[in-house]
Length: 335
Image (cartoon, rainbow, N blue to C red; front, side):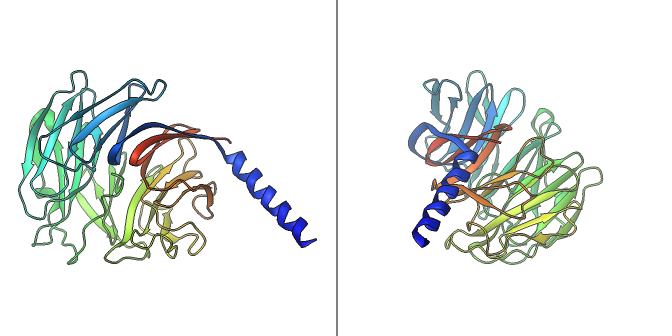
């Protein structure tokens, strides 16, 4: 009887898993670490290690191209775009802001940060402006830069009144520790959530209750609207730890509630809310697995044990592009 029950439980587990995942197909392989992707022209564009930048066609993976943005061995963990250009910033000093023309793939450096502590964790395009966050200098002032390349404007003075803790920076795990909606921009440091009002440039700071430490903290956030948001993370050096590594908010970041503590698959570097789900459905990528929640982050199901993935993006309501160590893959889900 016990053997029969074990077989039945195993069958149910396989059946549930197969109902969730339709396919997982790798479309790109290379010796590269990818932590930032963008979708454009039916292609997934990436920036990564060894100064590499390129694309692979989602429908025809044989259509792909890669260039090196610099002769130096730079590491990119950021990527954003507007109508004509892609933008990316290398981590570590000196940090160079690259602009890449979409048609020709010609690139140029448009700004350089030579501060010793320069380490840009994420880059986002919102309402024709770009926002990026760097680990702070010795003065511990918030180093949150807004730039409008069309107007040749780079500005950080509006955001340097907030002091961070000593050792507080951010984790450049997936280019997703910044999220935006309408007039609000949220930034996840390793310790807390900052909320910027772009109308009056005021900043508030809120604590999530998530575990924080040297290798532990908030790695990724996403907001579906001005109210609902999710933050995920954990300890990348101990990815099996799953205590206090997920939190959600229903009031724009003011209050956070820990979800599924001790009942999830561990460390997560990226979270993305499913399109048109209003926050109900979301997917997370970790170094050990991929998980999915269909109840606003309260419970989680492991849908794949694919490892060494860092970032992801929804192509449509049932297709997700995932990227990480040496590859880009397409995950198709059933609903």
